[in-house]
Image (cartoon, rainbow, N blue to C red; front, side, top):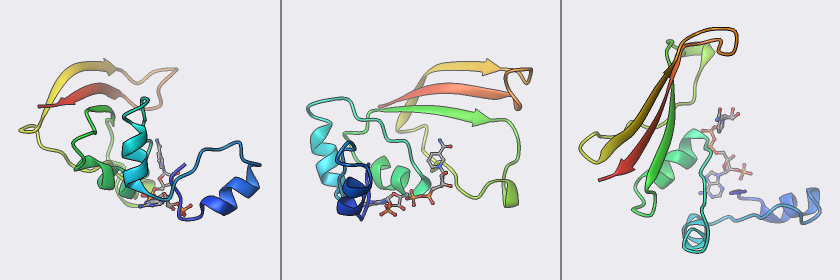
Amino acid sequence: MLTHHPREIQERFGGTVCTSDNIGEVVELSKERDVYILGGQSVFEQFMSRPELRTLYVTHVHDNLTGPRGDRFFPHFSEDRWSKIKAEFHAQGPQNTHALSFEVWIRK
Ligand SMILES: NC(=O)c1ccc[n+]([C@@H]2O[C@H](COP(=O)([O-])OP(=O)(O)OC[C@H]3O[C@@H](n4cnc5c(N)ncnc54)[C@H](OP(=O)(O)O)[C@@H]3O)[C@@H](O)[C@H]2O)c1
């Protein structure tokens, strides 16, 4: 867990959670094991420029969720720098309240 309060988190969860207050430390960890960045928005933004970030797993929700329905978003990224290698469309239905596209992008 990336947090400015690692000691408090350790105390709250009895040492069962791995914490860091340093993005560079998280990047170092990625040399030993796979690290997945789950957000929120500013965390995504801080990691997007890091060359160690190799793959984006993106779910596009096909609806306009700006305004009160959504105020945090994945950062824009350039197709000049990323290649889409997978795209799956899932229609709205019993399992999906919204139509969505799941995409995988890799850094060029
Ligand atoms: N998949 C999803 O749907 C998804 C994923 C992620 C987030 N969200 C939602 O998005 C909202 C949060 O997004 P956000 O953009 O407001 O959050 P954010 O700015 O990305 O930050 C989330 C937390 O990460 C920690 N953090 C960020 N940068 C850090 C750094 N450089 N060093 C150490 N810790 C750092 C801070 O934790 P501390 O306050 O503990 O220091 C901060 O409160 C929430 O409503 C959440 O539910 C949704």
